[in-house]
Image (cartoon, rainbow, N blue to C red):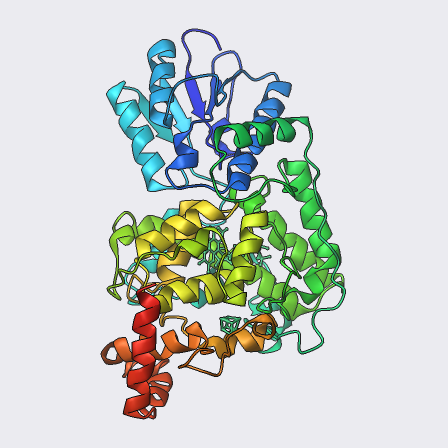
Length: 510
Ligand SMILES: Cc1cc2nc3c(=O)[nH]c(=O)nc-3n(C[C@H](O)[C@H](O)[C@H](O)COP(=O)(O)OP(=O)(O)OC[C@H]3O[C@@H](n4cnc5c(N)ncnc54)[C@H](O)[C@@H]3O)c2cc1C
Ligand code: SF4
């Protein structure tokens, strides 16, 4: 990097997009790229080792690819400097290099964004923020759609984006004639189980990843999770291969089984693309178009493809829009007045509840759980127990390889914990152990009975479910989508309900 720098292009660990607008007009003679590995990004939440390793490995591969283009990259490796946080590391560079301006796309969370802005202001260096073309919609697009609406429901945003992009559209008509094929999706595996499911392609650690794994083991030995089976894509080429593998082998059954769970079968028909998408190793529109193409080529049914596209074009873009619209206030929401401590077994998996044990042990081993495992096992338990939303948020942000706050926070505080009182999800996703019994085989390996709410073998989910409805009866009695559940509560004999609530109080006092 030469003196008299024009643009210092700051690239964070979740901004590894080779086509980023921050590189538009990049001149290696006048501009430089800046990247840094700092301890704080791994410790501000107690990050899973695989999450740390994934980010560092992908960053190092990215820097290598930029250097191969002949671009100057100032890269600060963990262990080679003493800066704890990004702003200290950046301030040091700004003092030394005095670039005319910083260029970057928006950070993945408010905390980092504010730290970089403050650092630049302190050094009197302008931050030129460029639009993040990785996303399909801009924040302004979302704002225009959201302004004046009483409720911001996913379905309408998703349809607007389908129309705008033409994805799965035949002219003005949704492909196949319907917007939504949920009726054909979301089945369980039945008693016989999933049978053979094609294993996803794995990416064996190369020299860079092995070095990072050793570094993480040495620097963060007490952090949760294992690196033994680390096989995540860490480059755009690997992400493209993972997409191709999913489209060819698993997409066709994705929708039908997207909500199903099974013991020791973590991946099932899911894509495993979230981390690659969130680090920007792959472009969401490429993913949606590949899925659409598979349907048009007769490789996958419309229900599977629409169900998959909805997750990316719909949910992913929607939560991003919500995040930037409602942060930073969202973090303090606690509409259900929940204050219980997160049970310690969330960090170990050591519990008699087979569903939680399965999902947490799988997450510790891989850094991954699929959507329903996150929503209807770990998330549901925290919601029913009444865990403080911030603690739930910190756990989810720490424990998944794909966790970046803009996507994690709305899913946790909005969809899963109802901490925002319904801004995102019109009702809390509450269910008893019977739901988990229907969608998995976990209960077959459990000492509890999902049909029981009291006694030695009562399923804690079922006990806490009735207690949750009783605690929040006034709030939900007239709710159009929960009133039926409240009416069922009202049918319970008062003595029995008292016994359920006493058992729930004991669970909460764990
Ligand atoms: C409590 C909770 C926390 C979550 N935290 C995260 C998180 O930190 N990071 C993250 O990427 N996703 C998060 N999700 C959404 C979802 O669970 C994951 O994206 C998904 O499980 C990743 O696995 P996959 O790539 O195999 O996804 P698939 O099931 O194959 O889905 C395809 C893609 O759709 C996108 N997607 C699916 N659901 C959502 C959603 N609700 N919001 C945004 N994008 C979605 C993802 O990019 C995913 O890769 C969370 C969901 C819940 C309920
Ligand atoms: S019985 Fe209850 S605790 Fe046990 S696996 Fe089923 S839902 Fe989970």
